[in-house]
Image (cartoon, rainbow, N blue to C red; front, top):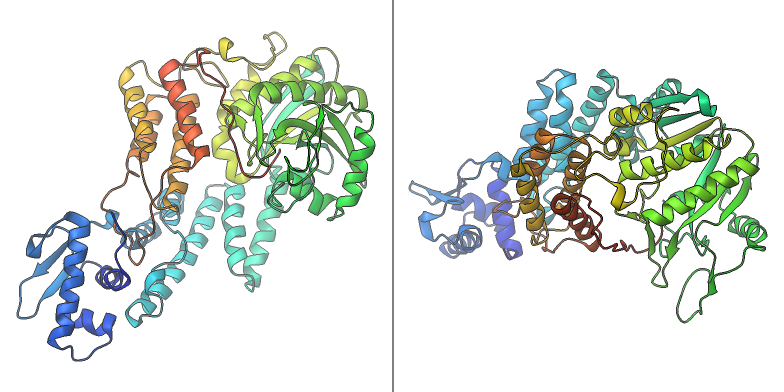
Length: 554
């Protein structure tokens, strides 16, 4: 569908603002063209834009349109004849209204869905039009209310970490709201008091424990930290080489207080005895460092009293794209635990969700990466003590993809008597089995798999506005989680949700953005899922590295 011209977009927005009620041609002419009373030529101008919209939406003509209908009467009257779920403007208001009527414990899903519909400024193409000003103001107020209600709902069900994530985002948009700042502080205190422990298991025979916690890795001051690097150990955080919001970027900004020279000096001392693999030319690698070191290289850094182990598990391409694989991660972890066993201080070791940023590990989701880290840690702990605790730190907004309940069961199954193996290869994985506990997760019937395969194949052909791809990406992640850790119903629900995002005659009032296909990273994730669905992880997959612009190691 092509984008309507500005005046046609304004006419569409005027009808959307009416909420499905009829609007006369004179009212449209007054509110869009600013003429009162309208002349014949003004009415014709309105009618031409309505005809243009009808041709765009359903190729209808005249009064036969199913999207913009003509109401009988002395004066031409138009009405937007769409369901609320076809217009984000209407659906957002409906979801918030309905959720506020529910008990807080039941309001989470509706409010979350409503906030997912909020993309940028509402009715941005008609900002400044008098007919839109009031609606825009009400939408902003409703958006703030929805965020506050969602935070309250999360708190009511005891999910303080989720409440904190929502409240922090709201506080960023309202920097002068001191009461909101106080709420953020209180929620942070609650999360710290709770310890945000999602799962924990002790292994007496190995004199260690493994914990899954929700929080900030850099705030684990009682533990030695693990930070991922690339093979060039780049430190420039200008969003071209290393993203400033990546874990490496935060390491430099927070623990090293922005002193890159101090960080580079420590890296230089640690690497001076490590044989280089190669040295790039500046003409080939235009930014960042040129010397490459072996994957699995470990460096020990100090920021005051805080000890940090840096592990190189990804390659920095000359195109400034970080690439890694499951084998690279497994090798890096093996070297890390050997180094920690020899040079650690017998303190807890804290590590974040490996590959959660731009430097994703090819073929590994959050569950797989956690399983790889834990298996390698326990394998080395059987030989001798590495650390009294392996602490896996996950940001609150990434908890859902980890599956804490399944992870807790996975830990229980790694008892002393169980076989503790290294990271599973493709050949060792059972087809269609959970990453954590090895149980069948999808369906004994092929129907759910067929539906998922069909939906994912369709995604590769879709063309959507850029903002819509964010929701598609989340739905693909949900489908992956259902495939790897859920059951038939979960897979069916995830597939249905994804199908509902397909391009359709959906009208987003006031905005008609350009459409584009899926980005390469999403296409690769879809292709990996298609392989799992059609081959069952039988080892026949060809490793294709996921590329990204800039590095976010760790």
